[in-house]
Each structure stands twice: as C-alpha cells, then as structure tokens.
Length: 246
Image 1 (cartoon, rainbow, N blue to C red):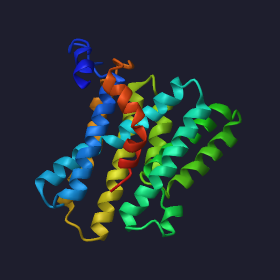
Image 2: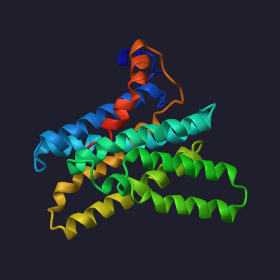
Image 3: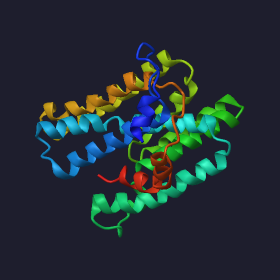
C-alpha cells in the first residue's frame, strides 16, 4: 500500500524522494479532489478553490508518465493500443458527463483527455522514427493541431513532447513546462475576462505550478509492487474513465 512506498523513500536530505507509485497515488488523489469540487462544491467556495488547485496536478503527472512509459516500454505497439482502448471507453463517459447523453456529435469531435495522451504518444513516435527534420516537425505540428479538439489538447501534447526531450535535463524540462503552464493559465484568464467571471475565482489554475517541485522529487524508481498496486493495475480502465468525467 501507500505506506509501503513511503517507507521505502530515501532520506529527506536527498530531494529525489518520490518513486513512480507515490507520484501515481498523488495524481489519483488530485483527480478525486478535482471531481469532488466539480460535482459537490460551490464554485465560489474556498473548498472548491483548494480542491481544484490540487486537481491541477493530475494532468501534468499523467503527461510526465506518458513520456516515461514511452521511454521504458518494451512494446510501443501495445502501449499505444492500451491508450486507444482506454480513450474509446472513456469517451462514452466523458460525453455523457458533459452532455447528459451520448447521442450527440460531441461524441465524435469533443475528445477526452486520454485522446490527448494518445496524440502525445503519436508525437513521440514521430519524434523518434522520422529522420528528416522538416517532415518530423511538420508531422508533430499536424498532430498538435489535431489535439486541439481534445480535453487539455495541445497543452498535454506539448508537455509530453518536452518531458520526453528533456527527460535528463530537469532545469530545461521545468522551464518549458512552466512556460506552457503559464500559457494555459493566461488562456483561462482571458476566457474568464470574456465571460465577465471575477478573476479571483480562477486562482486555482495556478495549481499547475505545483507540479514543478513534485516532479523534481521523482527518483526514477518504480516502488514496491504491493497487493494494492497489483489491484490498482487491474482497475486502470476505471481510473482512466474517471479522469475524463467533469
């Protein structure tokens, strides 16, 4: 369980104290807090802002582990197939949660976050396999364009790309992550301004920046394979569906 992974962490004098399992627990807990806010709390309340701030951790951690998974996987084909499978299942729940029905064209053109992760995966395929630089970046640009119709869209696609490119350079990785995060925050504030929504209600978007110190603590280790982790892997489809509702 979580306590087993925490017990295995190195001394706090070493800032690389988070293994893969602990970061995944954080992402799942952040997702739960985010959905509590969306479905149960008043969006003008302090609790809503706190829960949504914590919820901003889920997307960057998921993107980070798409890049990590792409690097470590023994079969990129199976990795991609799993993403597509979860994306298709999640799309039904995502569309129903947003439209109260699946009998809508949004089922086709308003994609969920797992599609964005899959597009990020395809971008990494292009980055690794296309040798002609012009063709490589044209293909990446085209996929980024397609990603705009999915939840988190091009933001997730770019995070995945640069998490992968700079996986061994934490300084550059976090600078670029921060720039992209600020672009997302600026877009959200522009949207709020256009809709005459009080800007203080959007402070929770800055929760994206919390991912920087958390990812800096990642030590590259898997963590203990407890009974909870084995059960957790069997339930990944449920987790992927939940992360797209709301």
